[in-house]
Image (cartoon, rainbow, N blue to C red; front, side, top):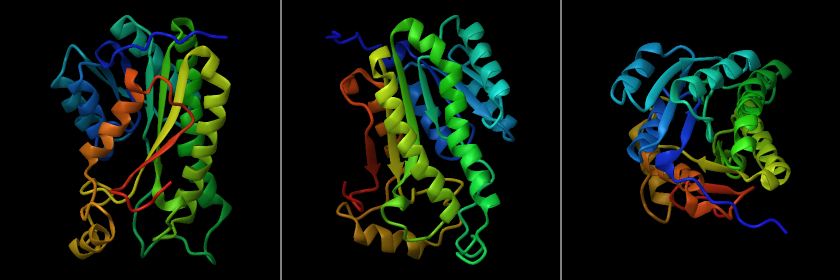
Length: 260
């Protein structure tokens, strides 16, 4: 029987946050930096925002452009992180959202949804996560420690807005979370998901009317909408030593709207 491995404290971790330059990703970056971690701020089109985040913590943050859909670019990003920080990547947060807008009026409906819509979201969400995991896996295995945190959604449990393509991709990511957890546990690598609902406020939810926030708040036990910083706290938990015996789980952080 394997004995428990020593978990690495947050302040000793090297973390890659995909899509980390803005929106929820920037809150995730700030949360890890606030705990003393070294953080790679991955971006695709938000170079200025990524550089600004990194400049605020020049010794512990590095902005790297990479398209998560491209395995070679992701591998180069992980290599750049290892060279810059002098240590392997210990933690990956798969947050990047590629080519998607939360616009209920313009979303594809059942009669307009195409395989191209699905392929686009699977490419960014599922293939992107697989690319980051594969790039970081050798370093994690060599160190006998790894934390993979995937960003999900409560929409596949409570599809109040039927974003078919986005939700299907996130549901597939949950399946990958659980199968990877089973496959990598013996290597000391924990894989979990944090799923949010509407967050107040990110780039994705900035156009949401106040009355929508109010309606959602009124239906949650906490009577309020979760903030991006509160969501990031849950990601910290899954990366921290406190979760050393937790893997393959999906934690819904939405004020209690959805119950697992």
